[in-house]
Image (cartoon, rainbow, N blue to C red; front, side, top):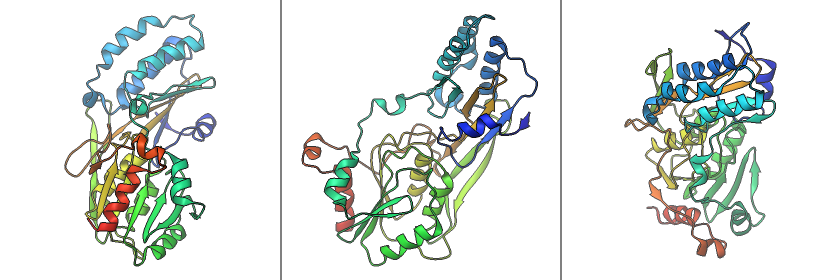
Length: 338
């Protein structure tokens, strides 16, 4: 195996939201017939996917069902659809097969859940054109409570952005961090925020990284956060989540739950608790699979999502009145110092 990033991989990184860490693999001088490509897809997934046991998936059984469908004369679209259907069995939004003509993905992690977010309501009823844009953050003061909406962890947060936020938090009742509909990005940005909200080194959880082809070949890493040596805020913080809070946002939510001054309100996050590994197939397609596990300090796996401290769903009645139930609950808790 040779660690590399091909030109195709580099361009595909622009279409797929990536966490800050990933592994890329490529096999040199491989055959490109359909049967070989199918074997590559199955074998790389078998060796590197991290959640077979958690999800009760028999990958050998999947091979026995899908392999007979692959013929030597099959066309690329048919081959893609067969491989994509097999990968769909993993029920994982971090698993993708990418070709010049399609990209497979598992969507059901959020489709059956309430939306629990309506950005136009935030704009009309809360921003009222008074918000400030601090880097990627949308910022407003709501009666001595600072509300920040962060649309994507793929948008980098600078030291200067966070210094401005910390200055504005001086003397305030609390901070609301809204990460609803944040599909993820870089966990580096998550750690930058958290380091500004703690006064001591804290254990955030345990990362298990795939180290071999066996389904249970993992190396354990303890993940900590150190307090930032500069402006920080250690008052009350509320994090708002919904099912579309995915990937790095699920990590962020679990990280934040490790802090004693944080309350999470809303819905269970979307999950996505495995940092992906990438593989350039011999025919130029790209395969991505989850290749790690993350557990909370108490041992809870975050792949299926992180539960809030307080479960709140947005109601139609409130939305008709242009109110956000989840945000209103956060304002109530911080206003009353609960």
